[in-house]
Image (tube, rainbow, N blue to C red; front, side, top):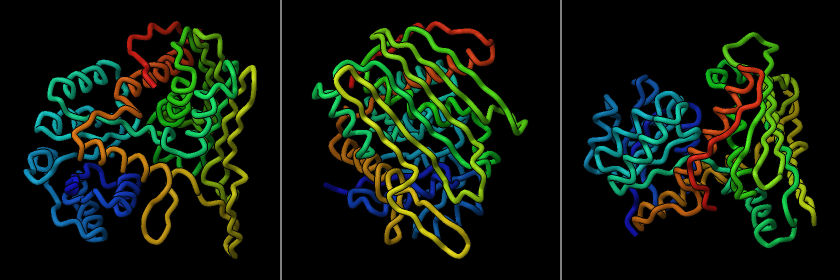
Length: 339
């Protein structure tokens, strides 16, 4: 199979993570980058030996050599980049959340469908081994009917200046919302969100959500951005799924790998985006490799559909509305969830 020629839109921290992952994917070749910050784009292009630095979104989407565009921009910019790329006949990978507005989600999905292009959204936990094994356990009937789920996804306070631009329900909880929808294969009846702000930022730094499924399952979501920098921990994630026949537990902290340095302890990520020998491994690599396989074969993704990403965004937005109104919010689910 010929290499998939990719253009990267967004050269920030996670855009760089994508480039590290593409280094480990034989079917991928990133040949162009664009970022509104030209200096940053040029630095990234030099570091990763990328031949083309584009001057605009239009230029990179028009590039005749590219098969696909990888959108790793701030969340509010997803729609413009995705629609432009699809309009120019490119397949698109876009980081989660698909959008911060359901109308934009619908517009992007409709455009991809009309143009017969791939639109895949970065819900990478479906490609992380531990979470995927839990899915297999559920499908195999080993846990029985799901009764309860509790997800924790906590981060350092030091990251708030970068990621506090987006509500934590859409930045962090959306990963676990997608997992819960994937695991239960059930629609949601109602949600209740609770937010607090200890730091006085634009969005909550502490958020809890309760999700009631039509199947009878209850999901609890926790995300808190208050881990002190001195802890040496970049993530504190866990998931418990309780069924009437068994229980699955995932705990990422304490981790299976700890480094004790003179500057202090560190617990590296070994599941989502670990760095080994100059490239990214783990779930991010698996996810982007799957996207490249789909583009190379001109095959729509089955492991993760854009409609699934819209469903997760709908629940996250309802949780935000619930916390703001201090009331439960009923969910009129309008999208299918095929797993």
